[in-house]
Length: 362
Image (cartoon, rainbow, N blue to C red; front, top):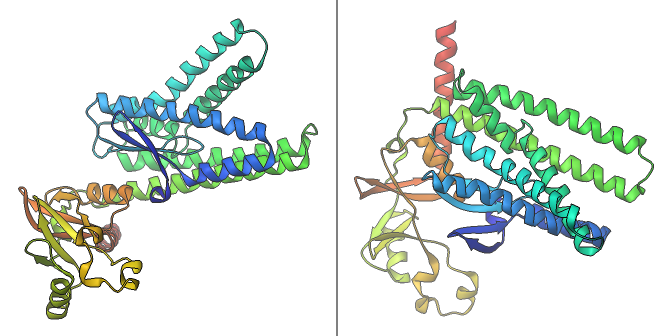
């Protein structure tokens, strides 16, 4: 999903992307009403400041922040949260709602002193949106901040998996209540047009689906983390590749594939390892295949130490949307890992662990 999010800039060296769902909702709002579109623009500002609070808190605690993806509901800071203590996860998660409450308070004070007019209307909207964003995110449902806050609190007396299970169950109950409340509101409220009511229902159903999917993903991730604990990346190491010396030509690539019957072609350059990707179709059409610049069809591989936890690598590759990475042993290249094989290994390992636990219980 994040791969389809357009890059819109960076702050503190953190890339910022606008998720496609936000873009769709803004366009839909514009088709219905310019005022509704304006609300979404202001919501964009509020969500950005909310996510920035998460990211700054993480950076100050020496936690890596890869990027900020702005969703309509917030919660899009891609932060390396693997194996951090619950207390630190709590601190990072709570930073967003606290910042939104603080901004809402500031705008609320400003409203009192600003004279009636367009500026006051904008400030009032910012006040309302920040308070709503804070309240919405602090509710204990995944994948929003409140779910992470609750789970980190529950981890004081529970393990990670059981804390996640209980939080997901609470999250699903709140989602059901949320939908029931929406239907009841639309049924009894007569002050809105039919089109506006339809938009409210569509918007809330979208929110419910988003939250349910996020909660399900959190639970799945917790199971993977629990059942693969102790499994290192070296278990997924693959030698199914060809390493060429220096930047190859098309002829070198073709000859290597025909001789070895391996389709993953790597080469080293300036201390980095690159993988050859697909040749762009327009290059083939130009009939200048021999003149193709290999740099345009190659990609530097992300690197992981073979001693890293397999769940940690899986999580990072999934969030970055990469399908192949280099594996190192004390800084020296020893092989590759592919997302497809990583997923298969994790699934088989989990099935094996669950099967053994059932046999033991029986």
